[in-house]
Length: 131
Image (cartoon, rainbow, N blue to C red; front, side, top):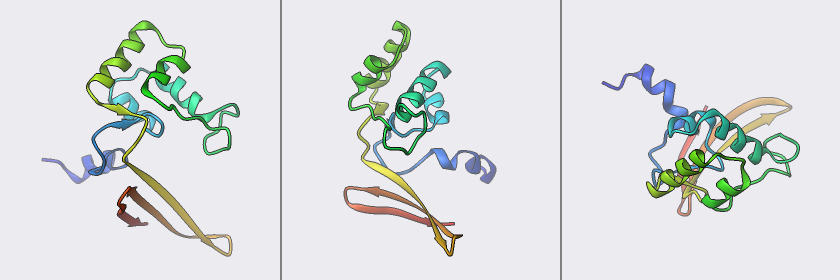
């Protein structure tokens, strides 16, 4: 009953690799929302990760080093802190992923040639996609 249409809507947010935990340091807003974070927490997480300049993928980007960092580094209500504790107790979130995704755009003579997406873990490349 899982149609191609349904798969295409969620394929960029799911993986068969990893341990089932959502990495707070890299999860997209849609994924954070899906596990129960409200818009305020999601916004604060994204702002924290972007660092001082407010832009991702620059030298000042920040990472949460522990789950406890989420509660101490952000301005959260007691209810929001309780939610993070509950997600941690359920082993639903992490800051140390077992796998990660790398997206690569290649160019020749300043023109896009190929796009690649790799899923990598300690053992090496688990999946390689070319677009």
